[in-house]
Length: 276
Image (cartoon, rainbow, N blue to C red; front, side, top):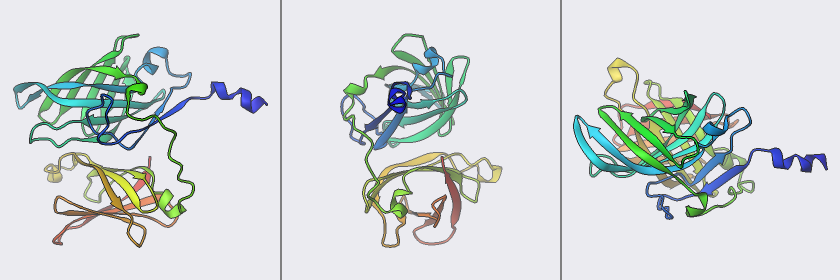
């Protein structure tokens, strides 16, 4: 009986099943599953108000040229703790320059603002009690700003419980989640993997700017929401942009081995990733 009585005090986990063609007002692609967790008591009420789905349009300045209402944006603040913020950054097409996509970002709370770093550097500032945030965007030679509006979860396409994967083989189920690490050439990478069934899987492959001077030409990017299949050996192979990405889980399920090579052969990079 005591255990049942505590349920009302536990953090509530809201799980949204959203597709790349989400309706209900969300106009940029999002991962199939989003986990939005209400903050614990160590997070102030004002900061906790950031949790949720925020949407708007960037006004951008690109190489000194101003472009108004240039690119749609959705930012999902999934989780806030006293020392970390977990978020999803999603963007729409920017004419022929940028393909729509999404990626995971981590950040922190600083003087009441959310500071996100990764594929793009984003700052969010909210007036307590309001349903808007002021957003600032910086990436390479791009900068921008926007007013983002908070979405009501009821307006989104679906509101479901998390898909039950317990019936799937462990060697398949263990892929599910976000994996972080780097290639052996220093490029940071994230694999966001959503297992759909025993055969199908959804993968977003994201990479950051390479921090090494001799690799400065490697810029951040993403292959968003690629639906593919596990092969007969139980691993994932994706061919895109004349590259082959191979993703394979090790036997004990603790590390993800990732390799990338040209379709025509030649150079090859690999890395070991750990689950976030």
